[in-house]
Image 1 (cartoon, helix red, strand yellow):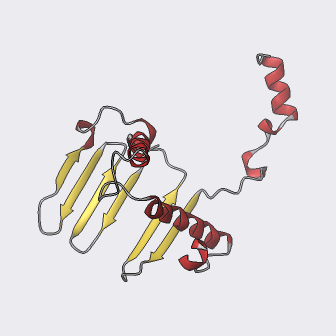
Image 2: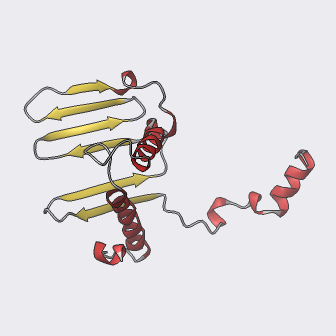
Image 3: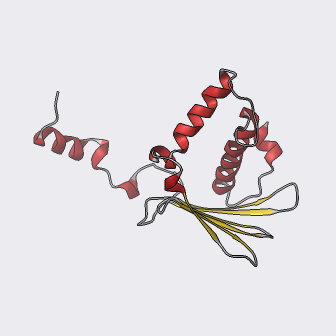
Length: 160
């Protein structure tokens, strides 16, 4: 059955599609700040916001020797060592396909297939499954903290 004007109207009036998003049971976070204390003593602050006019990702990494700004909307990475000139890297010159998270999805699948077929092993550019799981544990811990009023979550608890 192909939708027509009448069936679409009926679906909106009688089904779940016409519900106001603010009255739905969706409990997915739309903004969050996660502060992490790492085992080496460093701290990481991650801010995520689901509402922006720019539908791309932006990351700013600040360290003791400089900063890196990655702008997926502009396809650039700016590396600024403190006390030196910034280097602007035009990422669009490195690949032709930026679909699926800036081309990352295709790269992840390709690297995964290389690992499972034995064509490549873990190195500095390809992480093991165990190392990759760590980012998922962090996301689970952040969600647990959010659902518990910002409680401190120990990673040992999440990894069990």
